[in-house]
Image (tube, rainbow, N blue to C red; front, side):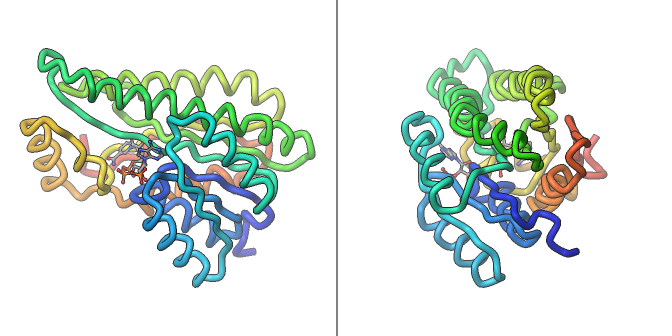
Length: 252
Ligand code: NDP
């Protein structure tokens, strides 16, 4: 069948652009009903329209994932309007690279708030749903977008890398507890993907570094990462692709 995710209810954070938007479209094309979360309402509206025109089902859930109450309310809304979530893609994140000695403490905090606290808020709101879905005998997935920065030594990436190292290692540990309940836990570690991610960097030298890297090699597209998410979710229930690295072929 062309709809391996029929009957699934997905939640994708950071769905207003880049990897999240492409993932939402791909999951919907494969038959999942998809709740799309991020702050930019207009982008979410456009995405829902695209998915609907293509014959899919989507729900816009405008929110800031660092707001725990908003995330909790969203979980209720998703259950009411789409059904119990069984596929959570914890993807919202920001990369604000800079030299440590510049002390861009606001940028440090933004990365920690979004990449760590935001991810934990989403996890807290949806883990009970995932466990219930697995309990009912169906597949259940908790997929987090980490990064190759979790393990590589990349200058000026220190705080960003730290947040992604947290996500990759947290996923390994969460997997031990949730896997026993038949909830699959996966971390995806992409290399360079052509998205809006570098646009938020406030350090001029670091921006140039990113722009040069992006120009020199053929990057991954958001759709490439979306396909990886779909592959993880469509695997048989007893198969957990726990950590996947996806790199542009020419990226060292
Ligand atoms: P984008 O900047 O295109 O996407 C980031 C998404 O996060 C946007 O949808 C943004 O939407 C959302 N977001 C930001 N702040 C918040 C918030 N407070 N609450 C809810 N949503 C928020 O970049 P990518 O698609 O590249 O990034 C997606 C993930 O992929 C990130 O975790 C990133 O670290 C990771 N990644 C990216 C790589 C790359 O090369 N691009 C490589 C490895 C990992 P909005 O502003 O509307 O809220």
